[in-house]
Image 1 (cartoon, rainbow, N blue to C red):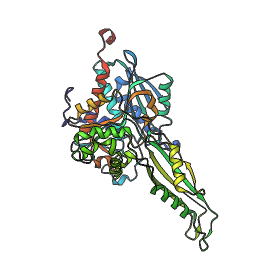
Image 2: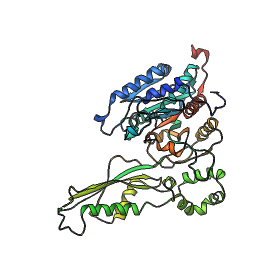
Image 3: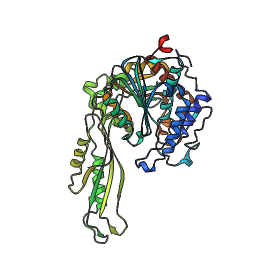
Image 4: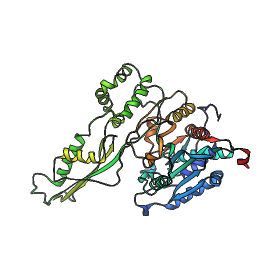
Length: 459
């Protein structure tokens, strides 16, 4: 692949594809119950990385935090240029029989590299190592220090991986120009009314909280029920929470996203977006009409689990439900809890936080290095429209948020709606062309950070 112009028809060769496929064969499924995690799969992945990228493991300092791996690529000058994140773990597979190829076989064909983690997130991890290995082979080193932080428990909130690595960097006084992680991609046919591919370089993420609603009743025989049972009461509480969502709001980062897209929007949307200052409520109502865009302008509410009762003729003594929220900047975990209690209007329904929670990014906005990431994306995939946005889910980068001046969640891979459905779903795969784009992007980024060492340094 040319170092000057990325060829969109170029795909990775068999050797490069096989290095990713070998990583996919390591079934590094993380679980909330650590005793259920197969740690040997992470050991196998570590051995594969060390075998496949010998220069990285010769020249970079490596510290481990459990199975998480923090590499330090020392720079020639003081300071830190970048923290590049990726994660080794993957989510479980629900129904392997539905897959075209077994999810952990790492099958490579003429077009795709197949397997759980092909997009989320091993392709990113391996592409970074490909880029750094190439730079080291060329005799390059960074002007300022670069960290590679590869967590092992991102899918279960990162407490033993990213949290500890971020604390280590914080304690060492590290402050980087750029933090780069997963999240945004280049989409085709998803942005309504936009014909060209859209690169969404996310600059923050929504918060995360799950609330447990629960009730307790006396119970008894179903032939003599009271006015409502525990099941009826919890169902009514869930209905009230779902029917009264958090308010719509056009946040500054989404206003920025729309402003950047305005140039490629058709009329009359272009005219409407030009009136964002006065037409904000209209714009938010239009965006709320589709789930994909409603998530950009609202803290979303998703009842996900409900249970109660033991037998058809027995009044249930207890019932509970779980409701998941993805929290818009400006809202908070506390405001979500307060909102639920207000709309439920039933003191007999307990509302409490369940499991892990995280606040949304405080003031997400494009930082000084955003334009660099955008320029590299345009070089690798010409003809894209570049915009900002928010990651709707939770990523490891939330743990590092205060460690960099610019945060970007992005990978320059081009995906359709069908491709996006494979992430955490069936038939996850990455095309050879997309994987080539990802490696080329990281090579260009490393090239911007690097310098040619002097003869004395090289000796």
